Length: 310
Image 1 (spheres, helix red, strand yellow):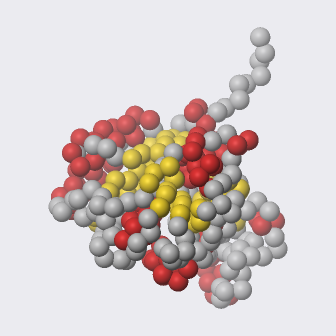
Image 2 (spheres, helix red, strand yellow):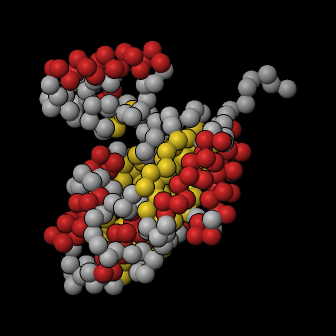
Image 3 (cartoon, rainbow, N blue to C red):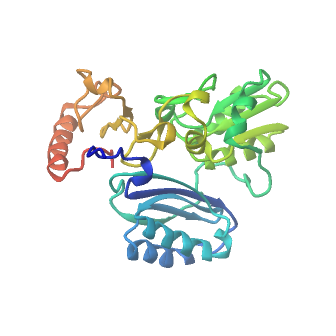
């Protein structure tokens, strides 16, 4: 028998990362906050959850037992019985604190009257997504922001060049027309932005609107690399920064100064200085801010906090 150690798979990693959301009417959402915060702390589960009158959204991480305890508590709340959860794993806790925040929207679009509970696009499962986007009549749109798209997207997808999701409605008004784009397919990281995006397009008169069920994360988990139409990595909102096929952790790091993901190649660029600046922002930061960032980076390196832009 060989004495060589067995290769470690993603399932062996100790930390479970759960991205979750649910659009549902929560008129008294503030009343749920204390019990949810308590179960997070009790089970040493970290991350952020957002509560609004339209539902819940967030990403949390902890041990298998800890995550199960939190999900059991959430699903015991009748409105969250059908909570949408996508899981992946990582070697270390990607968050530093546990937070439950009250918001106006669980994903901020800033348009009144958009309700995915009333009208939403057609869900397409990951295994059927390639066939849909191969249709030449389908306009494929990435609903994420510029810094996310910079490290990966689907072949042929349109980039709306937005800095925040609030800018997406303006893109729709300027670039899309229901009389011209007969079929529109959209995608995002986990599916939540697409639910609102398809609801927006339905409100504006688009008839055939589709979105990827479970988002990019479910696609990367489900579709083999040999069949994939995805290029690059997928940005995630935690210390992993990015994931690839099989939800394996990517090689990007976060630029502390501007929040952009920095590829392994760009980490070798002369304009990259960990924690201080990257090629994207080196000319936009004053010398005083660079000095302060360098001091902060030195402190964080001493504490072992070097992966995230938090």
